[in-house]
Image 1: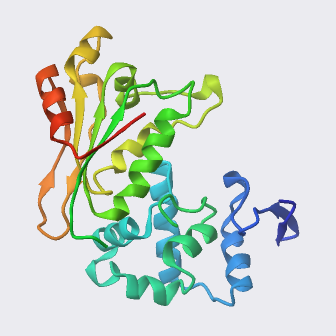
Image 2: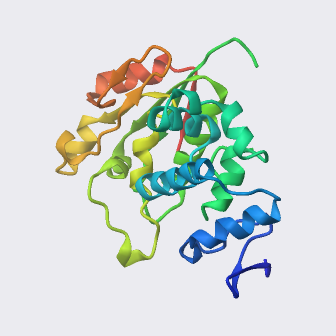
Length: 112
Length: 136
């Protein structure tokens, strides 16, 4: 529980799975640091999903399950992006789990 | 996964805060959505307060999870029923409740609001017609 990540010189606490302990600690640089740990470089396409997740959470107070995320992304960002192949190509550790972590959200409800 | 689709009814009878029942029930519904069953959610007694608009939990230091009910349509919940007698006994009506939209991505069928206020006869009918009832 005492894990932290270093973001711009600040120590930010994360839980044992790497999710932020406190949602309010999130700044865009958090996603950058987490991506680096996962050997991933964030592109605009990644940010579309991260921002989408943050808006979804803001509105509904939960992180969506991957099926729901896929559906909602297709609706908002276009059908060619609303499929798990596209989302997995961006977030190889699982679009909901990994992207939610980058977005500073808790682990999605419905992820087993 | 089995081909048998069962009718699941989640029954909510308790106020949203003060106990963990309402939140736990909501989480079970969201997680259970992955199993492709026919899911309905029903609110009776103090459970009707779970769907009321304009909840403010600042004073009790709890997360206001009422916006989350609006995602139920995304999680393939087809029907949300509210017992009319329970509403009336609390001075509430359908206008005091949040709306939940539903959209079927395959058929593109859209329903603006799946929240339905029903009378006692329909409540018992629906309970009888369900294969599984989870009561919270």
